[in-house]
Length: 77
Image (cartoon, rainbow, N blue to C red):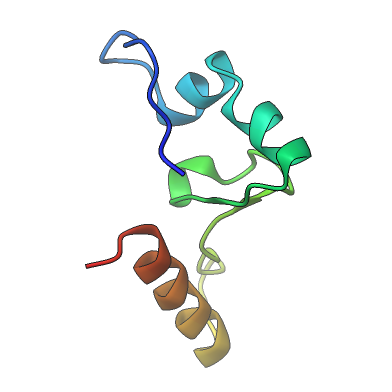
């Protein structure tokens, strides 16, 4: 799914724009999954974001693999 909407000021954060245009509230009840980048961490359970590296630690091999798969799904070549 591709979302098109009116423009917001350039300084507007991606998550703020998504909330302003109700993207998450519209997609969730329709069952449309949202695959997002790290800017959307905390956007809600319906938004899938990459795992964050723990402070002073590293991601597990599984987390790295899932992050790679999410990245490929978000931006297919």
